[in-house]
Every structure is written in structure tokens, then in C-alpha cells.
Length: 137
Image 1: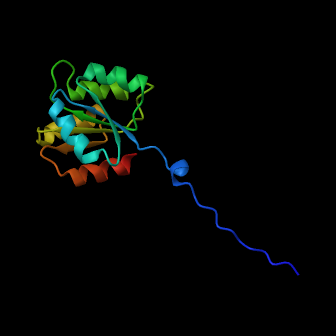
Image 2: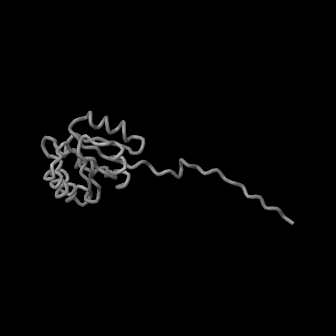
Image 3: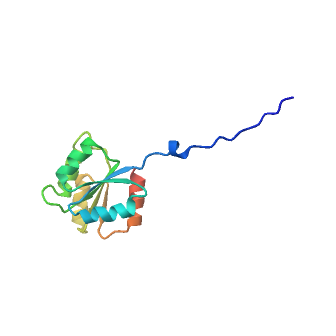
């Protein structure tokens, strides 16, 4: 008669854990990136682009899981950047959340017409932004 023992092997959580989703923050004000980093870095890996042009090259070179895109920026604004991202094969499927102090229905409609997946008006709740990002990635 043999007695079999079950041995529980420890799970290596580090080996099983998925890397944090990568979010590209696009804003001409570095301070906004710092605020978002302090609020979101425990859930996401964040990188920064200071313009629409640098966003495009960064998103193609290292595609993020989502993009937080400021609307009011010099040069390429958020709407034009969003249109370009959504019309570029390498970036067309990346979820884009537009962040803006422009709160009118026309501005929000312009964001969705440009192709954004969500439009968040500043000032916003970090908790709501966190939940929105988690649902997208």
C-alpha cells in the first residue's frame, strides 16, 4: 500500500505577472506628465511626448497600449495628432483618451470625429481616468 503525498509548489508570481500596460502621455506641459505619473505609475508604465510630432514617431517606434493626448498644443494639436494616429496602420488600433480643458459639446464632438476613444475634461478625477484606462487596455 503506497501513500501519495501532494506537495504544493510555490507559485512564482513574478514570472506569471504581466508587465504593466504602457501609456504614452502627450502634453506640451511637462508638469501635467509629472502629475499623471504620480497618480498612475502604480498601474501603468508611462512615457512622455511633448508634441504631436514626437507622439507620432514614438507611437510607431514603441507602440503603447493607450495614449493620453492633450488637445491644446502648439504645432499639431490633439485633434490633428489623433487623426494622424488613427490613419496610420501601425497606430490605428491604439486607444486614445483626449484630455482637454475645452468642455463644449462641439469640442468633444470634434475629438470623437478625430477618432478618440474617450474625451476627458480637465480638471478630472484621477480615479475616473484610472478606471477608463484600465477598461481600455
